[in-house]
Length: 88
Image (tube, rainbow, N blue to C red):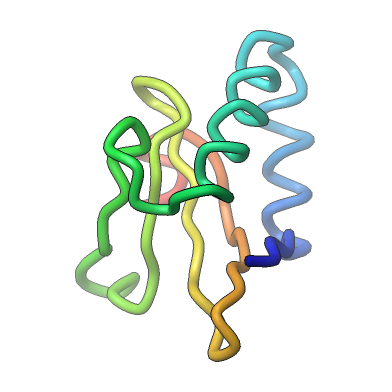
């Protein structure tokens, strides 16, 4: 599975994650788990509802989420990252 980073994700990552070395490290740890198994229990991956019903999200830590979508070819595009309030 290949993981792509959308432009919006890259901007949010720089603004919300890179400011914290701990959160940055945690993100890369969780991404490695995600790449092996997107539905690993530790990620709390779930399908979103409402306006975001085409997307999924997984948890990086208590209040940091990554919104993503599966592409038609089975790859993943990361769309947004931030707190619950910021991404939903």
